[in-house]
Amino acid sequence: MARPALDRGRIDPAISALRKSGASAPRIARALGISERTVRYAFRRLATPPAQRKAA
Image (cartoon, rainbow, N blue to C red; front, side, top):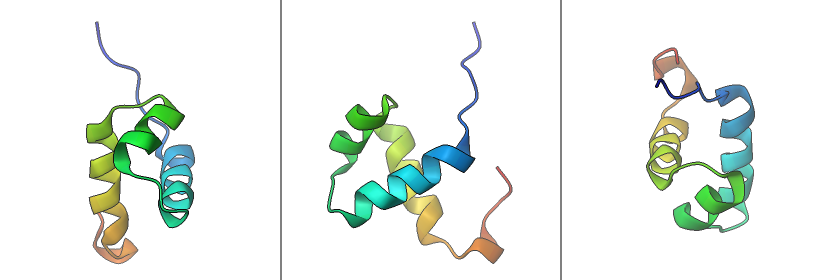
């Protein structure tokens, strides 16, 4: 069974806001109900300037 696609338009801003408040990856994952791996990927993705990001 395929996993549902994540809505990056909603998840990336939420991860960014929680990260700015000092939350760790495991804490953010629990708060958003997503995997820690997804959160860590978003950290790397958000650290890259928008012009260099691959389209998601």
